[in-house]
Amino acid sequence: MVRSVTESHPTSADRRQRALRAAYESVRSFTEQLAAPLSPEDQTVQSMPDVSPTKWHRGHTSWFFETFLLRPELAGYRVAHPAYAYIFNSYYEAAGDRYPRAERGLVSRPGTIEVAEYRRHVDAAMAQLLDQALSPESLDLVELGLNHEQQHQELLLMDIKHVLSRSPLEPAYASTAACVASPDPEKPQWVEHPGGPVEIGHRGGGFSFDNESPRHVVQLVPHAIGDRLVTCGDWQEFIEDGGYQRPELWLSEGWASAQAQGWHAPLYWDDTGVFTLFGRRPVDPAAPVVHVSYFEADAFARWSGARLPTEAEWETFAAGIHRSREDLAPEQHALHPDATAGAQLFGAVWQWTSSSYSPYPGFRTAPGAVGEYNGKFMVNQQVLRGSACITPPAHSRLTYRNFFPASARWVFAGLRLARDL
Image 1 (tube, rainbow, N blue to C red):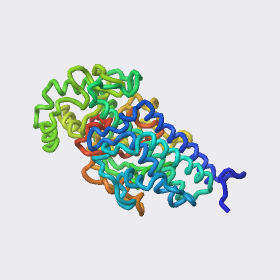
Image 2: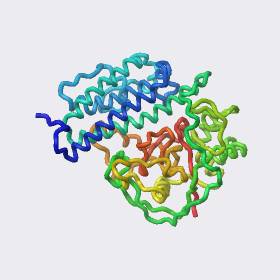
Image 3: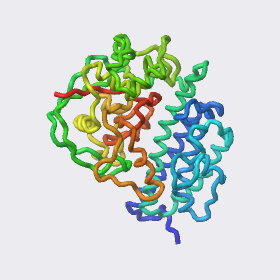
Image 4: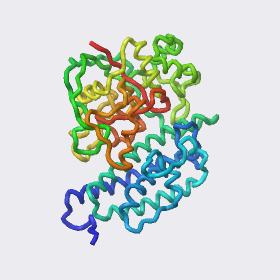
């Protein structure tokens, strides 16, 4: 007999499952809230190969639960449509063939109505599954799926900003006045560290992605890190000093990219201001600069007589300012932007580091298709730390390792500076 998690005398596993059931409803609902301001046409456009249509994000996150939980776990489950496994698979080779990523915007059907029906179909089945007692491994997959959907909530906003920016109408996604409150644009203060051995990586307890472990020792050199992010005003000085015309400041590949693509300012900047999710606005000199590539961040750091911090330096600096997620009570499993506003660690922009995205010592990929989640991308990427204003509030933590190619500009990415002592 299948035991329901609603029976009396709940175990710790029952309590965890109840919490995940509530989290499932909240996370899935929030995705739909993010999509609600967008028309069916908005949700179908793919403005470049790295961007995915909004409706694809909504379908893919449903496919994840269907593929890894419902099909193997729920007796009698029937897939919503046999073609969805092909349309909404992203990069999981072990899960079967997939539609080409760069052509997702060519798929007019299923439309937004059918995708909404797909989400309801999956949600109804997941409600049945979550009312049954699940193994710890299955609960882990539910938790992974929720964090995966939160990643796509952020990607949805990143991508739709690029989509809307390509329209001559420059429509606003929302009418909110600003994404991030601008701090007092004082000169940054340097926070020194004597160097030596430090531990970084997830401690265990609470959710983390596999790339955040194992926790290990790193040797730091004596260094200092700026206590605030680089601002748009700082970046304007870089532009005015010819930063985009001086090859001696740039890595070779970065200079080639800047020349080939005509970079002369951060993405979305022009002579009339900057395009934001809230429409075109004047450039705010006090706001953190955003939508710069790693190549641009590295060139700016060199122009400043500084460098980008390593991810170990960033994590050590952040740990000295705020407690990590693992140290918080279960109901506080997030790093709240308002608690770190002074140093702008979280809730402003992702911050480029000088660290290549590679496995920590002792890292092992999980068996099966889920093992493709992070490990297969550990080449030709740079690590970013912190979180952005579009990151779901419960999706930030000290050890989170985001990663993108060095040329990526549509990412909500900025930087802080470091220097050797």
